[in-house]
Image (tube, rainbow, N blue to C red; front, side, top):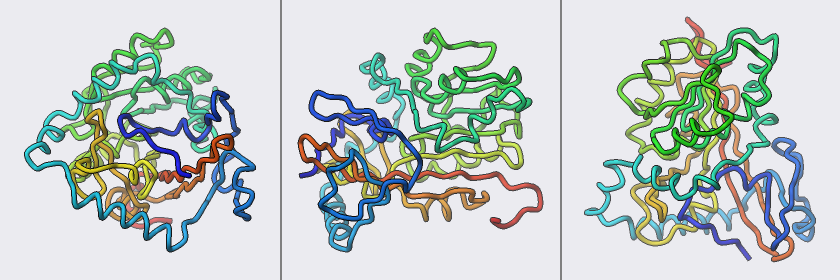
Length: 324
């Protein structure tokens, strides 16, 4: 039996490290990709999660057929403009309704993105980090909470003004160590408070999926302009044929692999090839991984196949023309 996914709201990474079993909340320990592999199907309910669960040809065909069915019933053409005109308004509504529920401590950040927390060490020196699509500050606050570096400064932006207000009203927000503001990654230029070539790291966690494909080029242009040579992009987002994609019903598809949820927010499902060859093709690829996981609810005997993409992309140094 497969768990239903609620497409009325974004499904984020908290499902990786925290699962529900009936009314009992079960914590699991993240230990990186590929550490728990399912070798015998009979053992599937022995643990809450399995890594690197590859699909067979039959599962792949089922997923392709579901997407083909979705393409037959897209969002009516006369309604599509609504979701392209002002996408931030839907996120404002989302945060207004979920302001006390949205913040999740991303426990996996330290394991998957240790470079991010290296900037917070006392001896790290001057570092500037920018969390784009900051939401309620799910990366900003964990980073600052353990910061020992007097020369670390963290920028945080979201195109939802409601989200930025949540960050600024959080008792942990410290304007001497951070700056939160409204900004759209696809804007014609970078934020006025960030100098070109000044950032050591940009964090993009479940951000790019909210963009239409025609916006990718400008987004990457802004990212490139802000990063120092050698600066890193930390990326995590939805992968092709993730359960969330396959559960969409009729009239949710805007265009290929790009959908609207019940609350009007948008979501795209990527392949690693797109990230490497179309989006970050002018960066050196440090990591470009597929995180395939089978999450299970042992009490209810449910299976949930999730697919996330994780990447680390380095802005090339001058005269660097190819990946290492």
